[in-house]
Image (cartoon, rainbow over all chains, first blue to last red; front, top):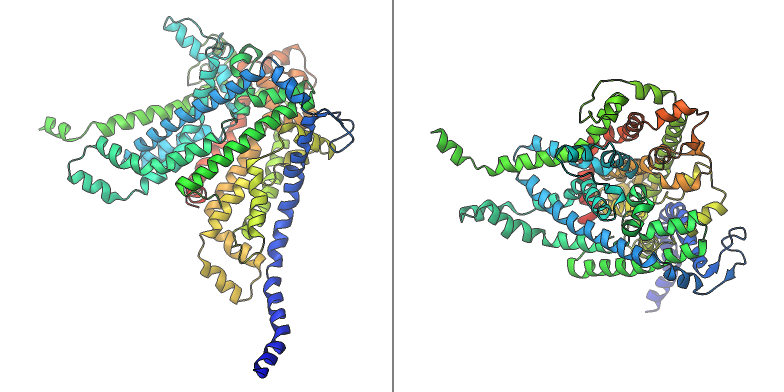
Length: 317
Length: 294
């Protein structure tokens, strides 16, 4: 008994040394994390603290952490009394939702169609082409659409005129502007969006299709009873994750296609923040609008990740 | 006989193929139209004769742009931000993703660090505090303002760490027995094995820098510091010509002409259009492996 204890006693420093050795090999890993953490603290966490601007009568000359005058919820009260705020919230949700809903439908349909193509060369050609708009910026695409949709000399209105239809001021008409936003966004993203759906379809067990064929199932029946049910999980998952982002209606797009003519139908939360903050220098009010958006988004995104985790077994990392 | 053959061949693949062809044309025709305008004469454009092929072919729009120093200066700023910004961002992505790909039992605190990064995807300070911070850091009007604030791409880190986790553990264990340090394991084993994911993320990072315009617009007070997309935004969309150097009535008219605008749009899109098809097989693979099956 004594002997054993003394052996343990003797061994202890050695054990300690061993654990130190073990952890020493981890030090480089912590060092690797340092640069990323520094950037993250400066450019992500300090702005989070800086959201206190929303409760201040912010004076930029005093600075982010200076002695600002606090004003409680005044900025929020002022923000929600502005005539356009509620409309902007509604526009944001409406435009986003339509983009997600119709975008998802089209992406699913196109993935199924691409999957039916037998020639791998043709498949690759179609995929390469439909990915293209995704990679172009909204500056490029807005430049193209503004030119094409121009009421004076745009190709679309020229064509309409030749068909005997009245010209339409697509980007200046509240009736048309949201439709233009929704359809051009779907146009930009549908091709790229097929990647994940297509991968899901190709991972379906081919035996399912073979036995369905033997039972005499038609092409449509195979899609209806095999492909779509097998895709259900990924569709729900991606829809959930995009619904969490519903307050991002696409600033780059709206900002570049926007004009004061379509403020009523096209002003979204992000353009509101830009206008209040950067153009009108009402920093407190703009930060309040930003905080409102962040807070609601946080709830939505956390909920969607939680549901995705719970119901679709999705783990981000 | 022929009738029988036709009957046997289902019409579906043909219709399907044609619909997809039309869809692909829908994607490319707007771009063809802008290219056609850029190579046509101004008169042909104004009279609405240009469709999808150049009418009355001319290079005059490109000759005009070749002399516009603002355009090339903006292009130079963009090239700088793509190289420096892309480099910093990818380095940070790799360095962060590697330790975070370890288990918490191996690297104490890993889960906490992962959350510290992940939370920034859920919540942010928004535009105004971010803008004030960069102002106060005195980064305004420097290239660093375009490069540093977005350097940590948490989404990319998540994709890469999921990719790292799928690599066979045996690779690393063999290296550890040989006495390799973590830096050597990362750069000699993990990075070469993760090429599809890295090619994807590099593509997105570089394209992201090439396409960025908003930061240039609000963080640069002097138009000569604008990157290309910000320059295009002011010239073509906002139609603010005050940033032109030494302009007169004639060049003013020319730069606002549709052909010159179209040529600038095309040049602003060209590098991306040439670049992405070559990486297609990587990004398709990278997206699928990294984001969903992780």
